[in-house]
Image (cartoon, rainbow, N blue to C red):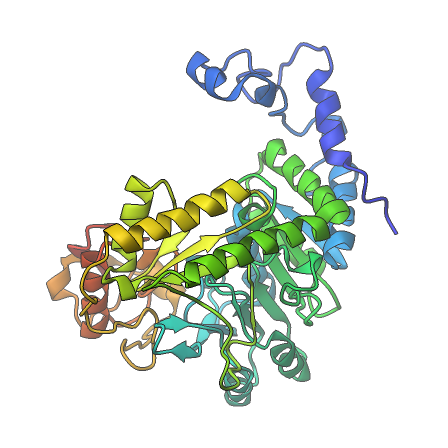
Length: 489
């Protein structure tokens, strides 16, 4: 057992920032002396004294032998991994590295169609061929859940030469599929299970939270420590266990997708966040769950509103657990779209959601929230229901990611081929049946609706236009106004 009280990287950064010396190394602001006054006024100079480079005492992220290595070993023990890597380019680079480390050009990888855009980047970088599975879908709530064990088993039977399986766990809504069953099936083929656990870094620290991906049998998992714990934005971790993943390949892949000038502020925040959770995680999560339960109970009692809960009547293999710190509120009963409700809450009532969809708003309740935050959230919804209610929303029930029923998809060439192919930009009306050459996704949650290599269909174009008309934001593509699209020549 390691001493989880230690914060080796943070301590080394503190010591080096306080050491008297004349700095003739990067960064150019030299311990904050060259920082512009407006920025210094906002952040203070102390943070810039700690904005250091790879000095001798601070180790090297790509060949750690000192304090970074110690901090990563402490994190591995705290999160239940055999080896951990710190990430300064977010979970995005971790997902890209996971695919690069397990798949080469032409290799198959099984993954859900509602993956984050970073997985598509991983396909482009690696040249891997995606075998997409549609997630289980709730047509009443219009929410996509997880892929099912049966779907994974069927795909592996059809594609036994697959090199890896990638699963999103939990989804952006906090929904968890049967990851243990998927791990068992995947391991029968002796291939690794990769998990995008960006929103589940807190799972290992409280028994009332869903099982962590590593505890469920994942070979590799990527966690955004900044999203739900106490690290700075972009600070994430990649963990592995077992012998199906080559750690050396992970290290080499990360060198391709991470900055060679990593921020020690981000690295130190990972060290501190690990210590915080190792020492106080259960207490912090207990408090967070209590706040979330209060919000869930009080909001569900407001007429016209409902909250996402576990299915009660029948088993759902795509929905076996729910992260109760993730609160999804259905607002269509107020005669409002989620986009309209989001705008009112944000601009008039002082409550900002994580993201909106056609019928819902989703909120992240974390260790940083306070009882005052919950009170403002509840009062915001109370005011929304009283003062902004309209007659029932009479829009056709649209499908957020009902890929097998509403949206037609066909991968004509690999994402990598399409990305590097000669392309042209055409008016949206002229792109039907052409091959897409860019990523197009409503954001958040950053799930692509079109990706390089897919044939553009009428249903997809209509869907994107409707999301935009409802107030959603289209990202990833060259023209976010969606008047044009880039297609393969």
